[in-house]
Length: 286
Image: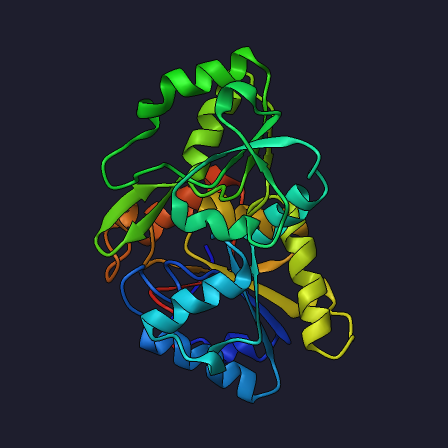
């Protein structure tokens, strides 16, 4: 069982770089978590580098605008690496192909400035999935017929956000990962651009190196922080990074709640996921 910490500072001494999840660690989709922002700011004040690592299906600059609205100070982080950035890189390499965008209009910033050939599903060469069209009322089951039609044409899907659900205030809403997993279950080919898959970690390491003036970051001096076993912890473990698990996110009710987590239930979740974080906290706090 990993150590349960009330304060981050003792653990922070062992690392030069933090790859921090955003939604569930830094904010809950409605407002910033003040103590978490303060902890990241203090880490940077000591000379550390903070890269926000998010499965948001939009470029980092668009993520920053959202963080501004939620009250996350710029001093909280050095840079942002998003699955939207990784997705955009793939789209740039396929500009000759016709694409169907499966997702809400707010995610269209993935394509800003690119000469993308948008088309209806019936004539598309591949699909970029950034989420549900309306995640306030729809579920993956709403897309059963569309996914079957995609599979019938053997369309390749680029998943811009491997998260299955995220918190929006006190509610959980479905993300692109839920649709991508459903499509993969039908036998469809899916490329996942975010956590827990390697491309976003490779991009984050490159981002951290730039932020540190070209100095490479040894894996052993970087710590991943997140609230999801499936994405944050599994991705960090597979990439060779240490991790810190925050219990105040999407798994909270599985182990007794945000404020009083059941440590035995936590241990069982980690064992089932094949992961073991360095430590656990209720919420990031210096």
